[in-house]
Length: 148
Image 1 (cartoon, helix red, strand yellow):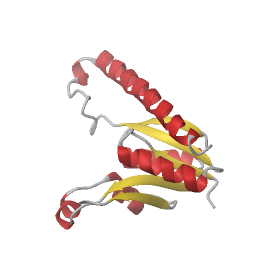
Image 2 (image 1 turned 30 degrees about the horizontal axis):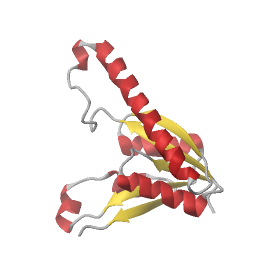
Image 3 (image 1 turned 45 degrees about the horizontal axis):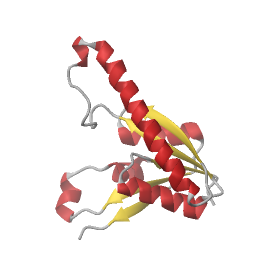
Image 4 (image 1 turned 30 degrees about the vertical axis):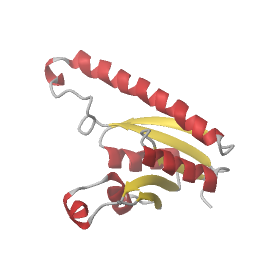
């Protein structure tokens, strides 16, 4: 039985499902929700920060404020299961930052949502859950959404 579970959390339905699973199955463990700020994959990111470094700091603070809002939501979900969550924010490429955070926090399991993909999508698209399964030194449980 895991003693520390890391749940990447971005407020999507899949992230909520992953958190619910972690809380229902491992509610007595330490559960950490992690929001990763990744300028390469975040739709709110600018591409011109090199000329305006102050904008980077402003944007980063906005994303951290957004994370705090998401963590309030995550705490409410955990409360439904009489579980509590710790929170963390990482900045960088999503999958590597999740692996790094798991190590930093001493997690022994990662629970992540994974989109069901057709064979073509699976071949063409990289996805965080798949990268985690391949690169994580600790077990990864995927909560899957099937395609209809």
